[in-house]
Structure formats: structure tokens, C-alpha cells
Length: 313
Image 1 (cartoon, rainbow, N blue to C red):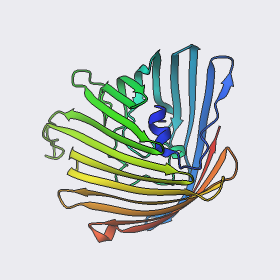
Image 2 (image 1 turned 90 degrees about the horizontal axis):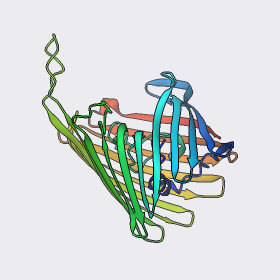
Image 3 (image 1 turned 45 degrees about the vertical axis):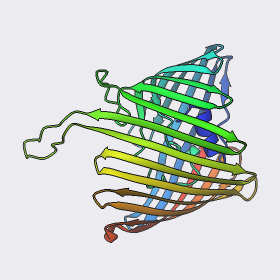
Image 4 (image 1 turned 60 degrees about the horizontal axis):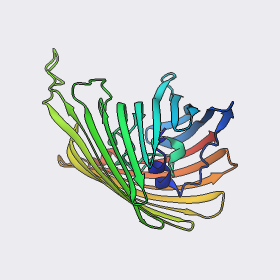
């Protein structure tokens, strides 16, 4: 779960999903979590079932010092998603070390941090992910700076000899407006072909430059994102996202989203999404999404209808 705080929560302020209220156990241990399930239908068939559960433990033995452990299961078995120690030095300066998620990108990594059921065309497999390392943040009235050195922005390969560097600057120059710019890269060594002559790749440096802006006024949230992509498996490319979320009431909101990713080799994916969100209670959120995907190869075009149920605690 993206716990960095200001960086993500500001970015998704238009979502009607209530963030989990921490359950306090004793004076220093807090627990949050969620259960996510859905049903969908498209050309690939109909699916129904559990997607993911997550339980997050936050231990604060003293002021400014905390340890966080997130456990989750997305159907492949339970495991540790994040485990890190954070230290607030005061004066806007903070550090953390361990296994954690980079804050780059507008859309959240968990369903409770989205405005709709699905991820955009320029999110899945494109944003950096979880990695092992150390990060520093510094914030003041002008904005927040985040820098980190991790074992692999995209693969978390546990290789300390060739670290990935990440950076993000977030600013709010005026009320309701948030601007973000971030960069992450990872060096990949050359891979030899297997016995069948397949799987070979040259050494390369995969990187993303991510920019997004959000403006929120009253019940309306408008956002746009641009990604410049270099040396991904699909080659070089670029992606964008535009999103509008409007809260019709305390319980009901509507999300409209359009996103696309375009690779230099000619491959392109474009999607259009409409998704009402309805909060049954502070702990129970429902969504109904209608999504249309278009590809360079029109035989892959698809329309999807999905319903989602999220319980938070």
C-alpha cells in the first residue's frame, strides 16, 4: 500500500472510498486493512471471486520512530508486501529503510486508492513497484522532495551492486492545485539466449519520467498525467491519462477516465472508462465500471463490465 502519506493521499482526494480507520491495539500498535472482491464480464469470459486482502501493522514505540509491515494475498498466497522502518527527524526531514513502494505515478497501487475498478493503460506494468532500499523526504511550505536508492525500481532484484535511483518533487502552488514530477530508472544486464535460442536481451537502462497535475475544487477533481518511457520490454514510448471525478453526494461519485500508451514500434492501447462509486457505509464501498479498450491490433479490442466490493477496516 502506498503509505507515503502526503504524496498519494493528496493525489486521490476525489475518491469516495473512506481510507481505513486505524484500529489501535495498546498504545503503540495500529492495524488497518481491506478485503477486495469483484465480478466482470468481457470477451475473455466471466469471472467472479476474491481479488485481494491486506492487513497493515504500524508500530510506533516512540515519537518519530515507526515500523510498518503490510501482509497481503492476491490469490497467490500470503506474503509480505512492505516492511520498513521510518524516522521523522523533525523540521520536515524524514527517512525510511526496508521494502517499500515508490510514490511515482498518479494512480494508487491498491484498490482503496483508486477512483475506479481498473488501472489505466499507462499504469499497469509501467509504474515502478516495490523495492528494497532507503529513502529520504523533505517537506516545507513550498512542497515535498523524495529521493531513494533501491535494489531495482521495476524488479526489486536484491542486487546492491547496481542500485536504482528515484526522485520526485511535489508542489501545491495554490489551493486545490497539486503538481508532481518524478523519475526512476534501473539498469539491466545483458541476458544470453537459452538452449532454444530465445530470451536474449542486450544490457539496457529502463526508465520513466512521470508528470501529473491535479486540481480539486469543491466536489470536482480533475487530473492529467504524462509518462515518458525508455527501453521497456516494448521499447520506447509515452503514455497519458486524463481523469474527472465528481462527488454527487457524500456517498455517490462518478469517475470518467481516458488513458493511452503508445510504443515507438507501433503498438498502442487506448481505454475509456466510466465508473460510479457508491459508499454503502464508512467501511463498505461498491463500484460498477464500464470500460472499452482499443488496440493497434483491432482483434484485441474489448469491452468490460465490472462490479467491485471493498470492505475496509
